[in-house]
Image 1 (cartoon, rainbow, N blue to C red):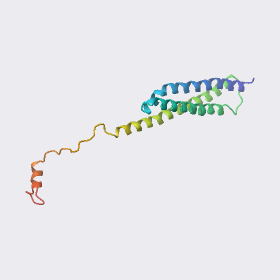
Image 2 (spheres, rainbow, N blue to C red):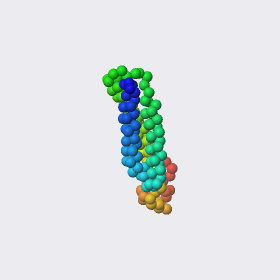
Image 3 (cartoon, helix red, strand yellow):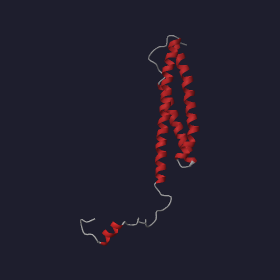
Length: 151
């Protein structure tokens, strides 16, 4: 087995478990966030969480698989480390970007749903809002004591 194939195996042995660990961590810890986003509807939050998990696996494992191939042959041990560092670094950046985009999207949904719930007042407004008492000048102006142009 040459060093290029060894590099591929090491890459897969690190990238696949890393993706699975990140997905499980996000799923487990994101459940509480989703329940809040969906106003306590646990069944709906669980369903969305499972769909997000499947999408996360498909996206990231697909990327890991597509990113496996290398145009350069690995000739020595330092080449193994160099290629692994680039490949795994990019995989981790992609995992982080996907995670941050998920958090950003659900934070937008959460903010919007909270604003929608605040648009309905908790206490209905009064029928009449009392006016503040008029000043002496305002009373005189209403009574017509002063003509136009006189204040």
